[in-house]
Length: 377
Image (cartoon, rainbow, N blue to C red):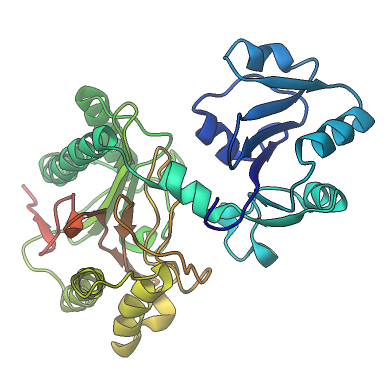
């Protein structure tokens, strides 16, 4: 903040509208009115909270400034920000980075009406929420190892049970049981998608949509989970039920995994040359490779996302398609690399997890080098 001449960081939430505020606080509490957390570049942080909610914040040890009506809120806010000129909020010009754009336009107008310039809090969010602590890193590595084992176990489960009428949903249930056994938690998922279902990047089977798995089927499994207080791991593998992988699937698998590896190599090369790769640049490397192979229009999402206490974290994304994320990949960040090609008859994705450490990018999950052959027994 001092380096950017930012006087304060003003986090704002109304009934859960800004998850960043609660991630920074490290807890959630009942709140029915508008909340501001004021963090000056130097000095004591304060919570500007409506009188009816103030007790919930006071009991947690925060320095609370209570307000009542609208006029009281504006007066208290003006007093907190008195003498300042630049304040950071969860705002990004033209909402170009949605993961940083949580404050509504009216609240930004209110702060500007007090004579302040509102700038993005991107740098603070990355410093507070993007950086992976040593303890969280070890838990992330552990979760990534467990997911790498569970996905292979899921393919074995398919091979053992498919003849008896096993469906997508049953494989999901099996994976969830493994999560419970391994001490992993997730809010949703996993994805088990067969044939044309795998062409839908966010397909998730239900009782109505789940289809049986048969010989000759293509299977995509995407699973994500974390250990308590750890950083999420998130991987995607693909397999084929039978003895010989169809030529088209094999060709596209090679294109996708080459794109994945080229992106990794680019990050490592930048690190070795003392450069900081920007998220959009890494996406472009993989996207150019897929486009050159003739499948550019079928790579329909960004290359990767930040990993944190939530699976889609608040650090830089690898993205030149949905946004142009120009945030830099720096030491202490974790993210995915997951190029994909999605056709009407099947989809392909290969996803690995990466931690950017002192020595450059470290792949923390197993890397799929070959399509998993699922025996029909």
